[in-house]
Structure formats: C-alpha cells, structure tokens
Amino acid sequence: MIRLFFTLLLSFSLTLKGQDALITDFANTITEKELKEHLYVYASDYFAGRETGTKGQKIAVDFLRDYYIRQNIPPAANSEHYFQKMTLNIKGKTVDTENVAAVIEGKKFPNEYIVLSAHLDHIGTHDGQINNGADDDGSGTVAIMEIAEAFKQASLKGYAPKRSIVFMHVSGEEKGLLGSNYYVNNPLYPLDQTVANLNIDMIGRLDPKREDKDPNYIYLIGSDKLSQELHDISETTNSKYTQLKLDYTFNADDDPNRFYYRSDHYNFAKNNIPVIFYFNGTHEDYHKPGDTPDKINYPILKKRTQLIFYTLWELANRNERVQLK
Image (tube, rainbow, N blue to C red; front, side, top):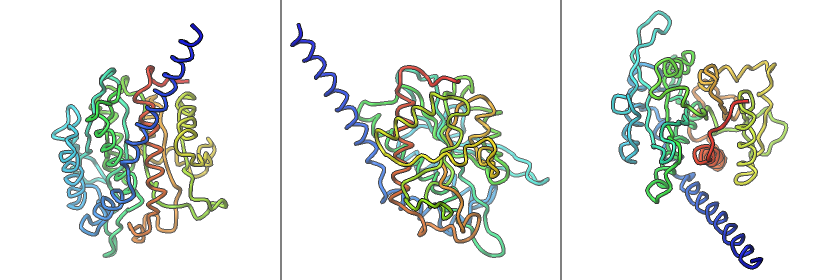
C-alpha cells in the first residue's frame, strides 16, 4: 500500500512537471523575431499614426482582422466579421471607427470570458510628422497577436482553454478610452460572465526615471483593487515562470499620475470586472514622433508578453473563476 501511494505520488508529480513543460513550450512560440516583424509593420509610416477614424486606423483594423483570419481564430460573436463598428462623437465631430475582436472558445466553461485588451489607435500625424506609436500601443497590440497565436497552437494540440478568451483591440483610447467604453455599454459577451480583463498598454520600453536600471520589470496596476485572488495568481505565476520584478509604484490610490484611470482596463473595472494593467512607464518619446520600433527592447517585450500569456493561461484553465474580494 505504501509503495502504491508513492508510485501514484510520483506519477502525479511527473504529470505536473510535464504540464509545466508543455505550457512553456506554448509560451516559447512567442518570439522576439515575430514581435519585431509585426511591430515594424504596425508602427510603420504606412499606418500614419493610426489616429481614430483616419485611413491609417482603417489600415490597422484590416491588418489585425487579416492576421486572425490567417491564424484561423474566429471572429467574436455579434461582431461584423471581427469588427465591432461604432460611431463616436469626438470634439463635436462624428467619427466612424471599430474595435477588433477575435475569440478562442473555452472547452469546459465556454460562457465565461476573459478579455485580453490593447488599444489599436495612436495620435496620428501632427505638423507633418507621423507619430508611429510603436510602444503606445503597438507593443500591446503585437503582444496580443503573439499570445493569440500561442493559444491557437495549444488548441490545435488538444489543449484548448477551459474558459473563452476574447482578443480585443479597442479604438479611440487616445480620445478618452472611447472604444472600451463603447464595448462595456454594448458588450459582445455578457459583462456578468466576464471573469477578468488583462489590459496591455506600453510594454516595449524602459522607464528612464527608474533608479533600478534592471530592465526585468513591469509595472502592474489594479491587480488587487477588485480581487485579491487575481493579484495572488499573478504573483505566483510570475514567480513560477518569468521572475520579472512586479512593480506596484503606480498602483497606489493616491498616485498623482492616476494611471489606473487612464487606460482601457478602467472601463472594465467600473463594471466590477477584476483587471490587471501592464505598463512600462512613460519615456521621452511618449506621444512624440520618436516612439518608433527601433527603440523597442525586444527581449524584454518578449518576456513581458510571456508573463501575460502565463497569467492568462492560469486564469483560463483553473477550475474556479477568479473571485471578487
């Protein structure tokens, strides 16, 4: 009986180690090379800064839709072939734009959803200069693309997530979080069945103001504001897989930068959906023409993207949905 117990224990341990190796294999499909290739296209002059409603933004949404078609990742329900079309009022002008949404359906809890988001727009062209927005938020955009591909590869090999994952590229962020606000007021999937939102906005550069010059960090904002469990899962996942320094400098309620209120996760948080906002901090090229793809730190972009992949994997595959405080 004792021998049988230890045999079963060893078998269980080896199974867990095998699962960890398998997850790492999928995470390793996220590469510097592919992130860089995507970003050099997405943040190129051809997109003209992707300002909401402009031709460059239309090129951006077509680029994203075509990517999901090539990956054979289906459009989100209730979208128009990946597009959630909307008409926004921006400074008294009517602007037609669209969010882009794809989905991988969960195999056990298909009606529970995790939204992975980043904004697809930037500030466009000013005074004849293109603001390419490679970090803001090309970095978040290409991170989602690579994470989606990794989950698709897992699904093809029989490891589809238990919960459904919505890959959401929102428009109008630079105009006041308008695309994500439209989404939560016109959700493609019920908000009460939306388990969490992981939002990525600028993860490709380093914050020059940090005294600690180690690049292996990421600022996390909001992870403990609605769900201590989400925060704990995030910490444990990072310790297990990526060992980045999770920096909560901007998470304080009295943070003068108020970053918690300044990206798309906030519209989900307002609807009582637990969130994590991933952010590298601002730099000298923030909202300037110098935010170009040659200045991205691709090794750290890969590592941060893999952290988000691992965290999303855990949230999507655990037996219980993450709980509010």
